[in-house]
Amino acid sequence: KAGVTQTPRYLIKTRGQQVTLSCSPISGHRSVSWYQQTPGQGLQFLFEYFSETQRNKGNFPGRFSGRQFSNSRSEMNVSTLELGDSALYLCASSLPGGEGDEQFFGPGTRLTVL
Amino acid sequence: GEDVEQSLFLSVREGDSSVINCTYTDSSSTYLYWYKQEPGAGLQLLTYIFSNMDMKQDQRLTVLLNKKDKHLSLRIADTQTGDSAIYFCAERGSNSGYALNFGKGTSLLVTP
Image 1: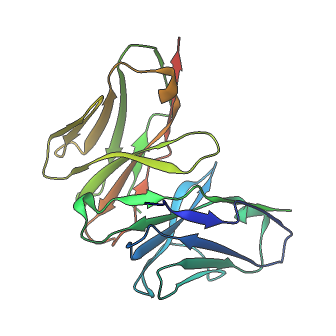
Image 2: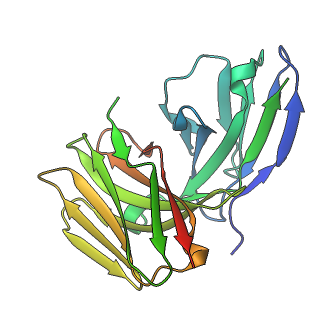
């Protein structure tokens, strides 16, 4: 079974631009969560989607948004990029009700904002 | 928010056991997880423990949970150089949906 895939793997943008990241969950998984990883703040939860609905949201500004499609694929968007948005963005998928409710992570998208 | 604390660095010799510790503050935590991250990679789920368990063993990995003290540990037996990585402890509260609250990670260095 294929794992979680994220595209693109690397991205370079400039301040003020916007960016869209994509995540394809493991087949059959319906929950997708997004995390931001930075050296200073560590791993921080952004939001979680289940059946196209945002169920949970972390403490990030409104410039960070996401959505989920009917095939469970998810995208996150960051508008008006700031230097501090440079990070590794990780997506995780989960099969709700599975043992341990484990979340399986993708390899991440490395975003650099110049 | 609730805190998850880990020591930042651990160095062990190949063949020894490694013990990585974690403390958390959320008393409503339902599941606690250990993830491994190698350079340039995402997070690999190693194991998890449900909050009503004291111990879980999975091959070389042993997880101990002291719910009273909110202390979690991961023991890696017969540590190998390939175990060198950053290890993250994470907890999931009963009211936080699927949001995981991570520690800052413990960097494990295994020397020959």
